[in-house]
Length: 211
Image (cartoon, rainbow, N blue to C red; front, side, top):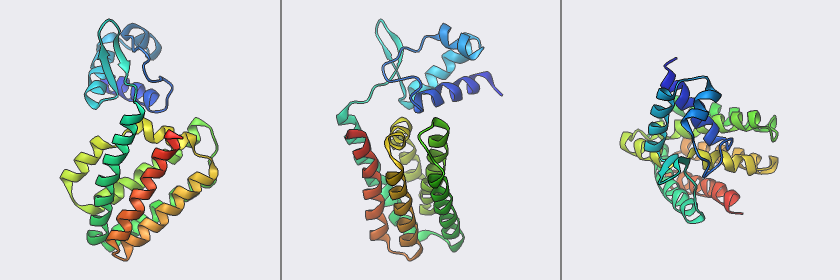
């Protein structure tokens, strides 16, 4: 694997999963030693993470993991809520029968992962991956490339992972229930209902973080 890509993947995962916390300094020499890489791919990885908004450069401190304020959490989730609700409405109008069946399978997979989940990081990774798969499929079903690009920028991966970490089993089951209802609203072409359900589902994550 390309060393810069390897460094990017490993540092990004550590940030998303909270193993490198907000405001933590990202020291090239230390990261290079920990990852058994040279400083050049570390530097390239940090530049890419900064472009994505996960890392920022501070005077006299260098690169740090970007902290997120309560106001920013509100802003992120409001933006994502509106964009993804619209994508879900479009999916209800445009999804092919084949995509609907894939969405049903995704929802069932998420529920299965939830039922076997616990509080370990590996378990949360599986829940998060199944969730990302389903939401990505809905955006695919919307058939709106520009909207997909905007959503890619609007979804804050560390916040989503942090929300799942804070959920107890009942809250994860509630997410699974939302997924089933959203998918069935898409399947029956109920665009407004599907969008409203998606908005409520996303705000569940915001509330978990703020409370």
